[in-house]
Image (cartoon, rainbow, N blue to C red; front, side):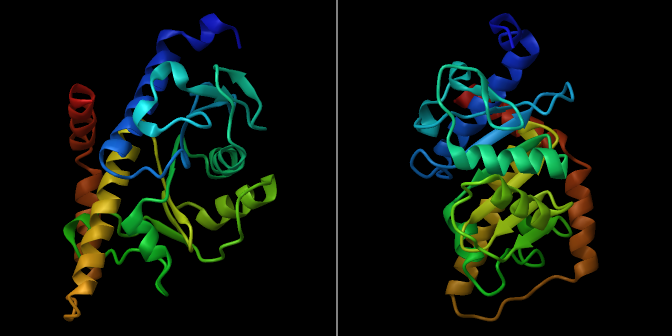
Amino acid sequence: MHDADFRSSAITRLRTDLALALRAAAHHGLAEGVCNHFSVELPDGSGRFLLNPRGLLWAEVQADDIVLVDTHGNALAGRHPVEPTAMYIHAAIHRLCGQAVVLHTHMPHATALTCTSDRALDTTLSQNAMRFHGRVGIDPAYNGLALDAAEGERIARAMGRADIAFLGNHGVVVCGPTVAWAYDDLYYLERACMVEVMARQTGRPLVPVDAALCARVASQVQGERMQSDLFFEALRRRL
């Protein structure tokens, strides 16, 4: 890719949104050192995707730091190296699951739930959790660091058609059609997991909501995605 193409208005907008999502995640306490990655596939059908680089804190990432890689993880544009696990996990999910945006974190409360026997969030508890009802997949088979294509593909196949995945003893993956929608889900997923962890810590019996009502709430949230866009634009003004 020529540098002029990498800096076209369409790709620059995607790079800007991806960098904003990373800084927002740091602001909300969802980052972990210089690990974990966010990516967004180019809308041209080439399979290429934008990715945060190796070695930068999410809080410091700007649009110019975002790199472009191909489906094999080869860097095509950008001034930073790429971390191997990002290449394998994200390339596989983009390719096999057809997801445009892939956000992978080890955010604390969601990750805590991946270590339980349930492996995931209970989507029948809080209202925030209900937005994910029917959307969650679980990969219970932790298999070490994703340092080869086979492990990335195993994770992607375990996700299947789910756009929210809990990876046992590992972390979560949140996918979506746009950076704004995926980030909104990521933020509220951690909030829902935090509430569940806190509720369980009380030791008092939990009161789930009927599954049919949870499904209706999930549908209501999916039908009101303007709220996701407004949240992301508010973060753009703030950060």
